[in-house]
Image (cartoon, rainbow, N blue to C red; front, side, top):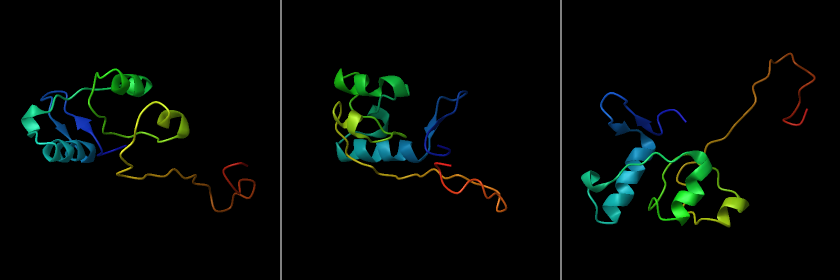
Length: 99
């Protein structure tokens, strides 16, 4: 998602909404920004990284579903995004996501 989390490749500085949320959580836990160890966690291994203690918590775009709830706990959502279909106004054969 644009503007949610970004790492500048030249400076390695991170910015965005998710980054600010992570900093707020760290502050509530008594840690400064400088004490955060940032890690990039690919979507296919997020549950494993949490369950094996490779990361303490994950902040980022992530779909909460029943299968994932069996593997990890969720403290959110803290942000909800939706997906929609755009169709020409004169298009009559597409009336819903199922057609």
